[in-house]
Image (cartoon, rainbow, N blue to C red; front, top):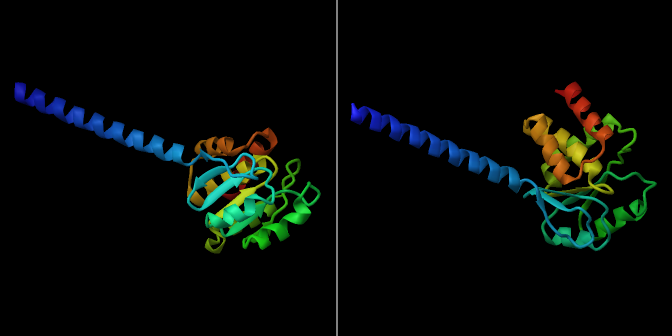
Length: 184
């Protein structure tokens, strides 16, 4: 009888250890997805993974550094009326990066802009890609949509990552959630 009990304990211990290792790996992968870093000229810079970084307001000094780090393109979600947007295309292209301007109004987000965003981030020729707006609020919203619709993430996990990136607006959170519901 003692041998049977010892085997059950050993099996139970093995299962617990394997489950713990799996949980630790999952936590490490989740934390890896939201690495806040410093990039001169970029506010609220987050390296999401090897092919994506996100940020807020970005000045001229950041673009050559993004190119040096191997980025291929910049997606700007700021509206044309926002400071610095008119000059950004030339700055990005001078640095040797592709410039993609997808103006997203945080007060009245247009689903057609998100459609274009999803196409742009899925296009491997744009990767690695740097995505920015003024604060990373709009970036967080569209990134959550991308995570759910293209990467098959659960909504709560995608929104948690979006929060870490910079999503703060309840209106943009609601927009992202509704967009996902209507496009699944």
